[in-house]
Length: 283
Image (cartoon, rainbow, N blue to C red; front, top):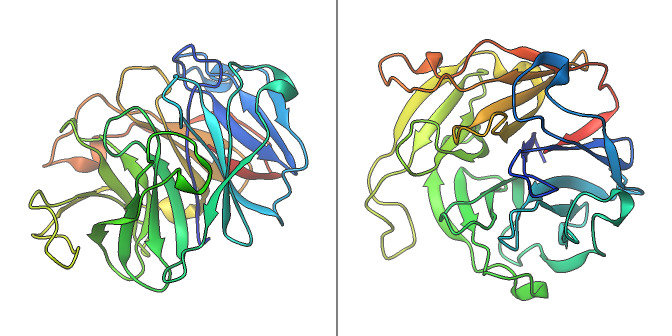
């Protein structure tokens, strides 16, 4: 993994997006208050997992794989094996998550060097976005509809071909178009939106047509982790970023997107947590 990105969900099913955080080898949920309010944006943490060691579980993130409105946890091991920890029915400490279900791993012909989670087809369930290792090819790995071992995900489908050094951070409807756009980090630190072409795929499975780009920010490579969330429940994506000094900052969506002034789509950052120097995952 070249860059850690997250995707928030509601662990207790109340519709307010919480954040999943790995401190050391332990998983915590910080309940969302439903409003951006500085250090009071998130409530007191609740431990939901132990022994989630970074040298075994390389990547962990929140996603709803059952469509019940409660966040589950997806984890990828250093051996590139995927596991889903289903939510038992609400936020209940160490009883929140069921035992992990192995859902498969590295495909024989392809490996991914970045992973992100998002609902790409509006079915209420989470899909995987990955960049093929050593390439600029971005795939969707669609969720098959239910957690069923190695049958949980369908075959990858090409979403886009980006620049060789571009990192897909996730997807969200930032512009209000009604469809998710790719959030992409360029190697110069710019954060950009990539609107995929509408023409579908050619017979070889490659996208037809040219996508559109909007640069929405600068200097985002100074953040160690970026998370897509919706802090106030207005249906517009907000972003969280972990700075190198351990502070977590929120970038609230302004409520509008102007293609002539795309950098205005997110407001100035607000600090929502401090001293998170031992954090290796936020989702």
